[in-house]
Image: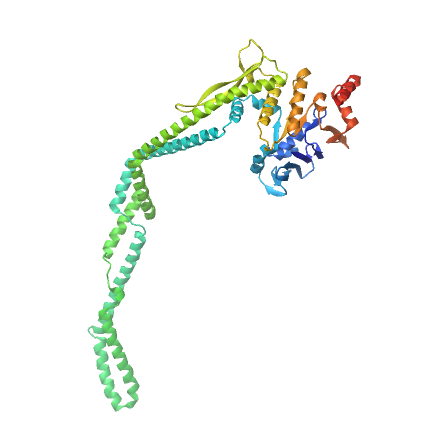
Length: 537
């Protein structure tokens, strides 16, 4: 139940607070006073969009806040609209929430039935939805939707497979040409960098070998350094014996001679780094690098991309070869899904036909209570909508005969505004009647549902609205005193100009004020007063 509604800085509303009661709450006032806009604020609160231009001039934001009483307790919803950005924020019990969350909650909180709802009723698609909502076993619709989703998934995968096959088939010759070129060279991941590194090592080894040989030539050339050092060591040894002052020189020359002999041995043996265990020569490496460079120029890609391309080509060619089997498997899945959908549709269509007969009788009974002729006839006409070859979804469309001797016509062809209002009221009544004992019934908002009716029909509509309000809370916007007089709580909406600014005000009426408003609605004067007194009694 909607217990409290507060609207601030929205259009002509500066600050309005309405405290609703259980049962029937009516909102009355002159045309243009802002009655429907109050209900529009409720729609905004529960997820509908609203233009930031509707924020009251000079204010930073507008807000709509409501207190709902639910079985689990009180729930406060607030939504704010920014003047600067046009964006809104929604809060549930003072915690930031999201619009999808609010929209999901809406069906438990409010059913807003307005002239827009009448126009929606004219839509064949909406009429079909109404019929489906009265199918007792709703799992049939779920199964139909699930099997249809499976079929759509198979068809989409089949479409993608066919599209990919056709695209690759056009490229097959080119793919095979690229594969042949790549396979002829057979590049490996990181091969080019590896070859360049090995090339550098071999060049360094070649340069080191030349230096080794030059060093050996110095030691063993025409005037070999080793022989010269041996001769020098012998002569210094004699000199040092004759002249002790040359002992240190003799020791240094002898040490140098020994070190040169050691160097000679190591140079002859060569360092381990010069041991060539690479199976490729420098010429082989140069030839391989040239081959790889030629492949890169031909395919206009670097080597890593070519290696990746080889994998992709192999996968695509394998796909082309295996596609026939994949297509066969998908065709089998498609046939299986189509069979399941056909069975699900048969069950749904059978349930629809049964529900249509029962619903037609119930609509006629409700409409008769709302002042329609006892000769009125209503039935559903089924039109086939092919979901898949051999799988027809039979969609129900409301047909009616308001008067004897006329052919059945679609509801949208001949129904007047007043007739549509009563049709809508009949459907809402029936939906409420199907509710279980513990079901949470949302508050009903009827925005001028009485448009286009009067006389005895008005009394029938009033009785139906009163019966509905006894079952669940109702907010009713009306211009008829006959309906307003049935209210448990009456609100009067008016415009007021203060210092050149226009405001929408909302007053809760009591006793004498209710009498005055009913009299105004009845046309005023003695007759209006008399009708008001009669309604109040």
